[in-house]
Length: 64
Image 1 (cartoon, helix red, strand yellow):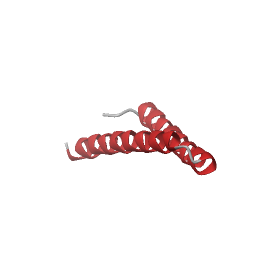
Image 2 (cartoon, rainbow, N blue to C red):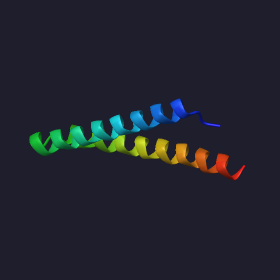
Image 3 (tube, rainbow, N blue to C red):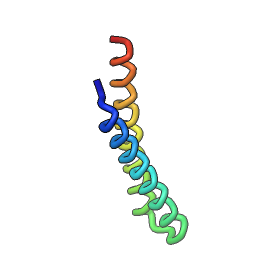
Image 4 (tube, rainbow, N blue to C red):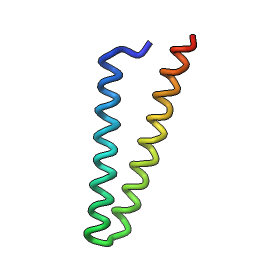
């Protein structure tokens, strides 16, 4: 079972990664450099995959 501290830590990391993606998109909007857009999309993609995996584990624990 996922501990309370681990769950809180994972949520904090997810929020920081989403913030990083948002900052990257803001840099892209401000500078127009495609590298910032690319980094933002990469960060967002892996953050969403990690979140889906985490919540899948939570759901499977609840079912077991």
